[in-house]
Length: 334
Image (cartoon, rainbow, N blue to C red; front, side, top):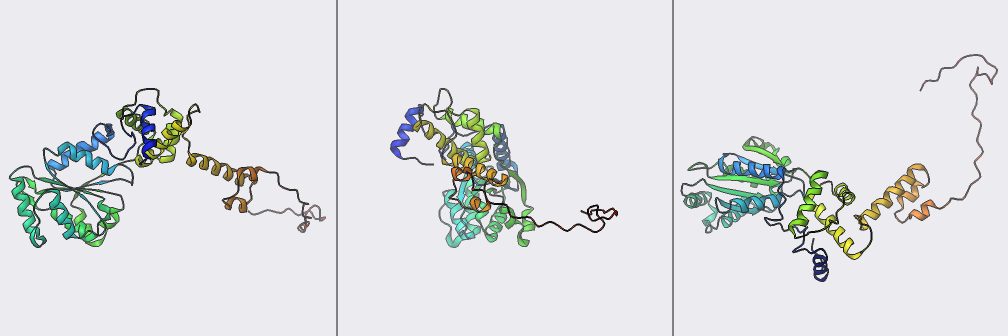
């Protein structure tokens, strides 16, 4: 999230920060590398060097896939040949080949010949471990383009596969891979690694890490109750945590002396909505009022005018009941 420049300067000065703590731009220092992430980075490093099969890393939008990709690339940039490609839905196999070649800083391939490209990569690696291809947002690719990547991952090199392909994608990619033409090829995926959302404890660790990495040193504005609210509102989604944490810091900046609270219109609206729902359930609020977004809490709590009760029509008594003079027993079937 980008803030207005003047506000941004006040924001950093107020908390003694060297930079925005919850920016989407993540460097080595601000990267949240706990045991869960460290384990996954180790697995990606292993597959990038020793596996002959394609690797698929999946995660929900905002779970940190691109950040993980960039961090991994920075770790091995001086050790392996790496090409990073940001996929687009309009990318054809030819477009992919051009983007991959640019990533390796290879000259343009004449007529988009796959054989010419393979020869160029073979000359580039020259007997070394090979090259790594990282494709971000791979779920946007068509079945044709995914087929092209899977076939590219099957090309042999001097030591195993010539290209070790790692796809970073949202879970929806499984729908494309389940298409009849790709089911058999999908078996080429050696492993599907999930990138889970943060739990409550990891959310707290993440927030404190990002603040410390930005130079914060003092009593944290993120109390347990604040972190709890942020976790519940974000469900552990890193992109949403960043947004809510930034909003909270701005609230503290603009409301000095007030008790810390994960405020903002989002929380106020959420509390108001929950109260209105409770009123509707308990009968204090009619269905029409609930559906009307303009209904305020004050209006909902206002006493309603009393109405004369409608006369009740007495229900006929069953034959044989005590009041009907009968003495037969009746079984009620529900």
